[in-house]
Image (cartoon, rainbow, N blue to C red; front, top):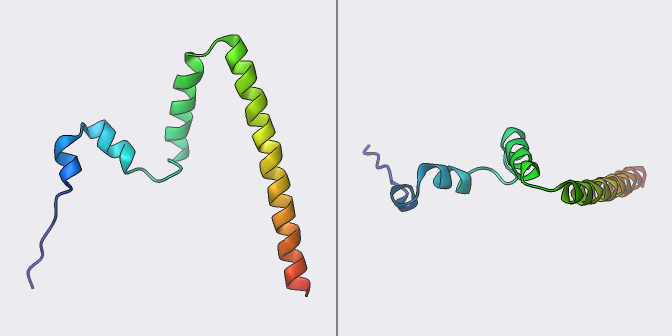
Length: 80
């Protein structure tokens, strides 16, 4: 049985770092996410960092609330 391998044409025209970023899982691995956040924070003013931190905390509260509602719904469905 013959096997053929295909070369992604994007791999031939994009820089390696760009190609890799396009093919990382979404969201990216935590290590990549951490590096990207660190790089972004280094370019922010103290005011921007404060605003960003407030937004992150708001999103964390939203995520916790969503998780609680989903878990409660799952428990209710199992009990029924």
